[in-house]
Length: 422
Image 1 (cartoon, rainbow, N blue to C red):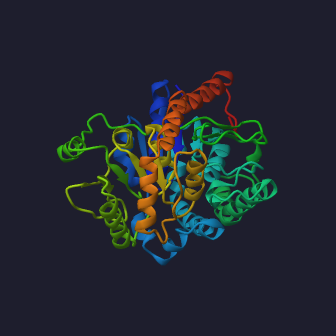
Image 2 (cartoon, one colour):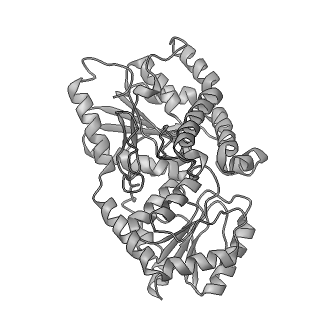
Image 3 (cartoon, rainbow, N blue to C red):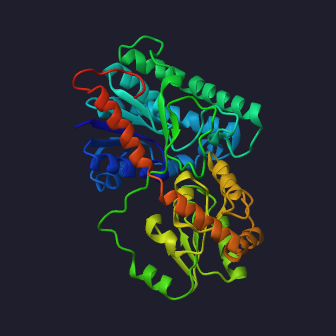
């Protein structure tokens, strides 16, 4: 039995896919644990996985600070702000990361934790796999998703991704050097990032693998979050869905802290002018809407809810984007920062969304017009359904399991352990 430890950091959307991946690896016969912020314990243990808590300040409190607000901007400036916050968070988690990985044969890491996991894997002779939810490796064909959605052209796409990598090394370099010293490693890593095996938890239908990526860097398919076996929708939600035509879904996840009052007003005006029924997710913005045509909810599994709606208005986070595509419903992406503009652009390019509307400065008339087009234009629905059928044929978690099984079968950890990529 292979012992696998998955490390990740961030919001619910940064953790839930790894719970799905872990559950699939466990079903394949491996022993799987996830190291993540302590608030995600129930999500992880309900999937039958071992949980290794990482201490973290309340992210809502951080998001409400001036520093947190600076991080919620798109482009290089916002990305640098996110990384600076990440340096402080991850530095404090290093002892817990080392403890969580201590018995792992294979260490898998999200984009935010891979620089740390790679050093720990080298120190203890474990295999290492990068398993990001975002594409950021240099290529002529795509801009790096963490820097936003604008295609800069072949040369600039590749150069900006290289610059993104250098920025990460510069901001995290001091922490990584301290970690290597603590682990008794030399100053320089034995294995370069170019030799890592990188398996992206993204659908190749949504982001085809760039042909200029090196061998070992793949786009394998989405990893679907598990729905707890004991979860049931509230009677109010069931009754609302049965009371009329499919509603639209509106939710901005962990975005919009400090903007709840304004966003709530935009949502209310949009629903008033369009007459759409809506399910509104409170989220971190604490969205509020009321009326007989509105049902406000807290967390409801997307796998259950989104097939019941006519369109999805969301912040274009990687997880919600994937869930909407899986459900085969049109979208109106409302991105704010980080990789959200990238996913919003992809939804428009795929024909699933009529337009992307930046969350900053969002207006009810524009949101209403986009929603009317998303719901009323059959082309968006047909395209969404086509993509959903293609995604249903993919098996992202199965691809990861195949890589692990092949590597461990070729060189069993009990006999020989090596550092570097799988």
